Image 1 (cartoon, rainbow, N blue to C red):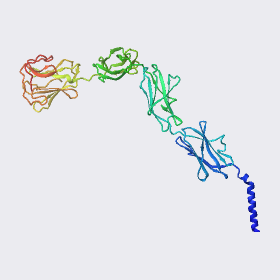
Image 2 (image 1 turned 60 degrees about the vertical axis):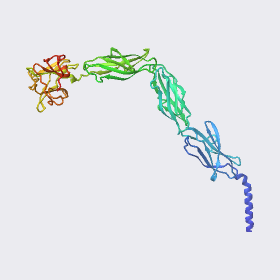
Image 3 (image 1 turned 180 degrees about the vertical axis):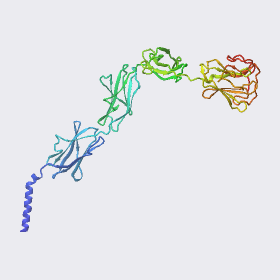
Image 4 (image 1 turned 135 degrees about the horizontal axis):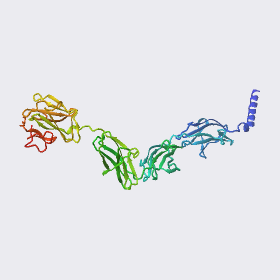
Length: 498
């Protein structure tokens, strides 16, 4: 009985399953665990699409459909472990939008989609750009264009991925933009803007496209491009302007030199130094050329005078010019004359008269300006121990250029010289400037560096010691004194040697 029951159940189950076979197993496949990897793909990434497919009867096809720029492509999915199917969408350039969906057909010819809204509404992802071009060494040549110049705009452009396009965009005086394709030489890209009219303003920038994005130079472009203004064609350039002396002094001329060059046209024309004591600069001096250096000299002026000046350099046909400073003529350059420091170096002993009733010495100013002798002093050196025994200040005195000044022991204090200037004995006098620098020394014995180390050369009345040439040269024993006047032509015999 038990055996009969079991057999009856098996026949009944078999009959039941036979009856529902065409109903229970008919239906589309099911998809689960669907994913893309990586989840945020970049332009360097292939994208792996995977899903687990379940179907009792089996799968006849599994495909990924993806669309890029309106073009649909298909890739078959490959079955892996645990019925996980995979397919790869190749990497795309940055900012590409990829629409995709999975379509699975089973043996009953039924199709399952992922997402379930596909193919009408597919899934999507956007590729992140990582290979945008970089732009460096952005420049124009020449750097200061004139109306004679075509202008080459160049830059170094590189990219980790491909460079799809490079363009130069420029406008003239705010007009319509012109676009030029750049030409590559290695990583250097360039294009040429044709020469433009004088004073035209050219705005320009470079755009480099790649990996679905654009890079600009300058980085503020296109909103704020680079620009240049066209200079006069053939205008000379003025540089290296120098004043000599750099600090102009009262009574001294000022030489102005400049380097003036012409790279276009017929060359440099007239170069004029304009100057004056007002900004009008009403006096003109033609600058003379020596090679590329031009020179002119402004006459001397009094201390405190402000002298204004500028250089006007024209090209050979006088059609254009440039100025130094660039703000001229509205705002010229200027300098203020300062008081000249006294030049004591030409102040010398010129004559000693030890036989006169009033023993005297004479100074001579061989310079070109009157000297204020305030601060100048004379030292007398002791014959025995070589120390200073007398210092005579010349404060309040002056001596005109090319004239003589006499001091004697019969003079009025404080210019009285003490006894000690001898016709037969040793004596030494030193002349010093206000800073204590030695201007001159006279010793009738030994030598100037070591007085009293030699033999005294005596003078008999009315002879005196004097220089053969006023303020310089050798000393002689002169037959008579010429105090207050020139010694020239008074010397006789050989020069005195101590």
